[in-house]
Image (cartoon, rainbow, N blue to C red; front, side, top):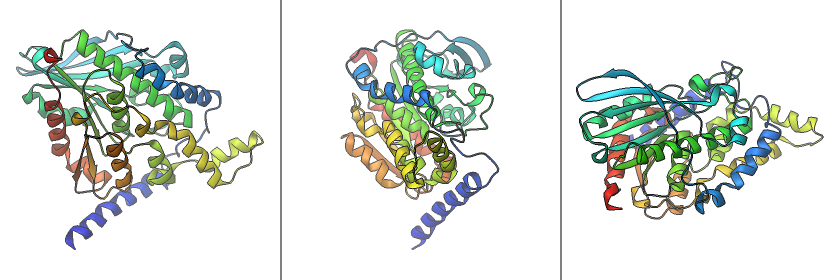
Length: 360
């Protein structure tokens, strides 16, 4: 009884937070400028070409990035550096990115006095609204003691890469969500390739919370060699977040319908939502290949998540036999705050299930 009441409390906290963030007029809704026109058509086409390109090996190795680094701080045991590099996305995708997003930024926390081949490095991807390095560095920081480095990628359209007209995390067009995801995949793949071939790390992984977990799943799925894949509090598809979860209350459905009406396409709001489902089905990770080492895939999900229903997590586990789901008690918001230790344990355990590079 107490457990059920506590679970309901976590679920209510998610909805109260969601109502404050997404039903008030404090911030604009997602996609207030519509679908994205020709850019959406471009991203849909590129998404449909994703699997032939990556699965058949036509797009490996990816473009090699060459970050320019500056040291932020250094101690006897660790060093934090920040780097910038030009996005490795192809010309068509780069042209679709806002100018502010074409320079990628990373923070890199690395143990000192340990050869790279004896270390692991995990690329941490951003959740919705995570505009800075801080939260992810706090998550990865304690792992330095276990010879695990943390590389934090600033998402396209977020932080210093945010377009001038965009407020916070409220993407202006539906196409921006697909653009953010595709650019994140390409940049993450290039960073993993750089960590492998230029730095020589013995093991690698990719993790993320919420939206970042969806992107981590995609990157891990498409990587040609075994990496630890660690999605935390994440759905199997953006459909779940924007059409079923709390974010549906923060979406500009009327603006999306009005844009279609201006094109002489008459739809009810229910039909607009169905069109959104169709577009966002391109983000369904169950359509992606099973990662090379599914045993090194560990999902961490919350028992009472108001944003991500349990069925969404279990769908992805079913699609990737051998992967593991771990449950933490809480909702989406409370688990972000309270369960960093569970996320760290998953990172360590996932990396333990990847062989050291020399033995491949």
